[in-house]
Length: 259
Image (cartoon, rainbow, N blue to C red):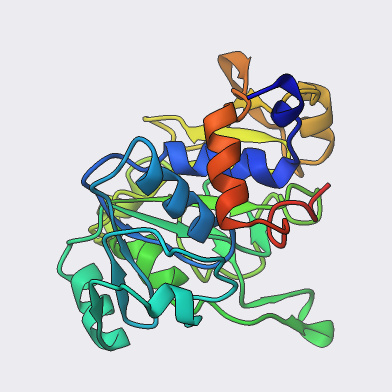
């Protein structure tokens, strides 16, 4: 494949990075939008035995053959391993059978707590869609990965409301409050990738996407952002990864609108 194929969008990069978080044989709570493509990519490349769980009750041991906009689309149902009910999927999550979940949010803070409930002061609240299954994934999955747009108004010192807990107040907070899941393993944004310090559980910049500087990331972050030295450059999608992403999103519905 020629070098022209290596031109990619920020969305395609985020899908490739998210797919690399999926290990072969894992049970993955897939989520909406970019995670659908990440699962298809991982399943088609390095994780051929991964199992995908969808909140609507679909379980897949193969990527959908055609483009999927929402998890209840025909292509996501066709060829599914199991079409059951939401309670069965949530039961698997509660039973500790989910290795990895993907979630997003309107706000995030330095400990990976997410807010999709409301923003603003009490007299001028803006209500948001709510957590859906995000809160369950954040509490019960062995680890979860957060995907979201990186803007200063979203990366805040303290979220207005916690709908999906990360590491709470940091340190051993999850253990003290009795959450069985392992918490966030990574945050993938439009600017970089973040990991969490194993002791403090504070988010730290691990890599910046090609063309993005640390200063740009800090300018869009509402607290004094830590870095995990050395901060590297996020590996670009390979030609194979791009080909797979474009096979599952041929018109760039999810991957060519982010900037």
